[in-house]
Structure formats: structure tokens, C-alpha cells
Amino acid sequence: GEAQDCFDIVTPAGQNYSCYPVEMIRKVWFDPTLIPQTANMEYRDGDIVEYKNFLTGFWNNGSIIGATKELKGTYEVDAGEYSNGTVLHMMPPELLRRPATAFADGDIVEVEGWKGNDTIWSRCVVKGSGSKPDTYNLHHQDLGLIRSVPFKKLRKATCTVPPKYMLSAYEVGEKVDTKILYGLGAGDWVRGRIASKGSIQYTYNLTIP
Image (cartoon, rainbow, N blue to C red; front, side, top):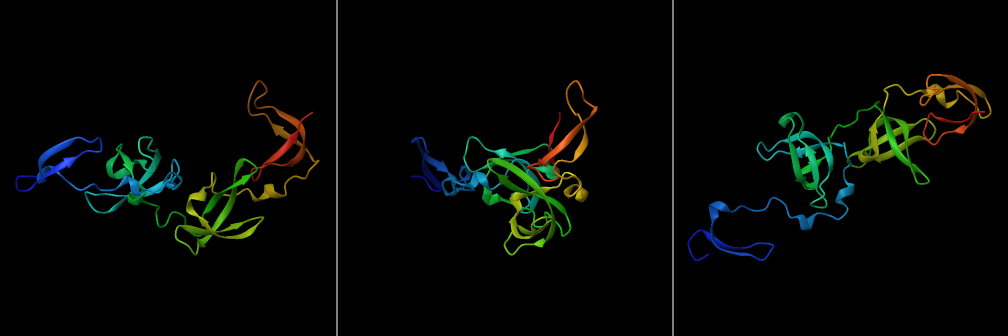
């Protein structure tokens, strides 16, 4: 600008402002044009993350609420215990990271996979960190050791003790009784027959007369 310690500014909309004092200007803290187009795939709703706290300089625990609709590649983040109830808007992936110790050796987890167009989750046991950052080695009861599985492909198992007995509990063609969970007959047990193993681990497809 013409005066000392001031600047002329042009906004993204093309408006010009003359001689803005330096006290009213700061550098942008991230450039959205530098965010990769694939950034929306980095985190999923509900993922546990650490975010950079500008007030303290430390990393705090939070969780992903969802992708920001207004700015591609950024996220809405629940600030967690540090600021109860606060939502951090438009957080870029550069200010987020996954917890360094999200899973410990021996933890029961589920790993994401696909069967056709369907997503399935299979139970595994964590066998230490993988050879790459944010990855883990897993032991799958049917497949054995699976190496360097990315963190974002894992989630905590829905129950802490894997139902190992179910792998060989029933054979195809075997007669069973199954409990009806929904509808008019909810709670009743009816006779059926094992048709095949289900697409989700520890489940079965049944034929009911």
C-alpha cells in the first residue's frame, strides 16, 4: 500500500481493498489447492484421529464426524475431551493424523474386505505393527498371517472374544433350530437346515421349510 505497514488486497471474487494495515492481515494456515483430490478417502466417519491444536501446539484426540461438503478434502472433527462439544470445521488432512498406538498386540479387530459388491468384515488378531507406518500385521483364523494392513481398513471387533467355535459348529445340510428376531414370530424357535456359510464371518445361510 501507499502508507507504511499496509498492503493492497485482491479477494478471490476480484474485489480490491487498498492500504489494509498489517495488524488486520495474517497468512493463510493452509492452501486448499494443495489438498490431493483423493483426500476424502483418507478418513471415514467415526475414525479416531489426533488433530493439531494451534493454541497449545500439541496434538489432541478427536474423531471424524464426516467430510466437509463446502470444501472438498477437508473434515468436520469432534474436538473430544479438550473442548467438549466443539466441532472443528474444514480441517485439512495436513492437520490430522492417526493415533500412533490405535491397536495393541493381541487386540481383536475386524478387517474390511469385499465379496462381489458387498463389504464384509472378518475377525482377526493384531500381531504387532506392520512394516509401513499406520499398518498392522494380523492373524486370520482361515488365512493365517496377513502383513501390513492399513489402519483405515480396521475397526474394533464388536465383541472382545471371537466365537471360534462357530467356524466348525455346523455343516452344510445339518438340521438346526434358529431363533426368529423380527416380526410376528419374534422370539420363537423354528426348525431349519444349514444351506451354506454366510458372506460375513461366523454366520450361516439357512433354509427354513
